[in-house]
Image 1 (cartoon, rainbow, N blue to C red):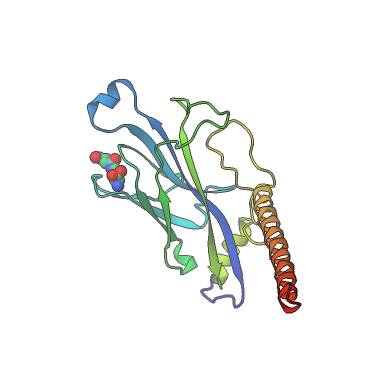
Image 2 (cartoon, helix red, strand yellow; image 1 turned 45 degrees about the vertical axis):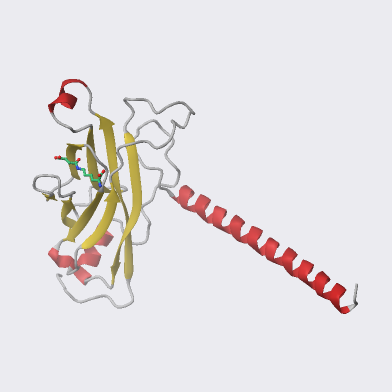
Amino acid sequence: MASNKRMKGVSVTLPVYTFNFATPLTGKKANDSDHTHKWTIGLRGFHSDLSFCIKKVVFRLHDTYPNPVRTVEEPPFEIHETGWGEFEVLVKVHFHPAANEKAAQLYHHIRLHPYQDDPAGGAWPKDKPVTCFLYDELVFNEPTETYYQILADNNVVGSSGLPLRKYTGKDYAIPPFSIQMEQEELDRLEKAQREVNQQILQLRQRKAVLEQEKVSGN
Ligand code: SLL
């Protein structure tokens, strides 16, 4: 039954990511204009095309582009362009009316250049796309009953939807986000915390020794 009633105390999180891929333009196309790269920017979820919960995505490009506001009403929620410079894109996510939610705003900085060597240590191969992935979460606090049902029907409720393991294959278009990656980050934070605690302890001990020496006049 359709209901706009909100579910008190309920919060549903949908992991998503914005991405861009870029490759240098070569040959004839490169001479037609001052554009140096072709690129794609988009928004994706982890195991479905997101159209069950998103009505449209509006990408706001740099003002140097003709018609900088690009609206995509169907999946895949992505656009293809060419250009010469990097810039920040405002990605506005509009939900279905049943959600009764304001549009969410995400930001993605388009990367055209690798700024690093190939993981193997060599120069970045010319034909290898530069990729940039940004993890994000769409959080629905106290969703309407109708929208909650839509989210539940699409397995968003009760599971993060993230893959268990980090992708290690060769497909450049697949991001590394996973439970494993999250755990590795938590482990790094915990290790850093332990090290800081250890240093604090050592400094306290050193201070106590110094204070003791002062008192006893040594
Ligand atoms: C920069 N601050 O200077 C940035 C701006 C703008 C990129 C980058 C234009 C495409 C067109 C284009 O690539 N703009 O002329 O149609 O790097």
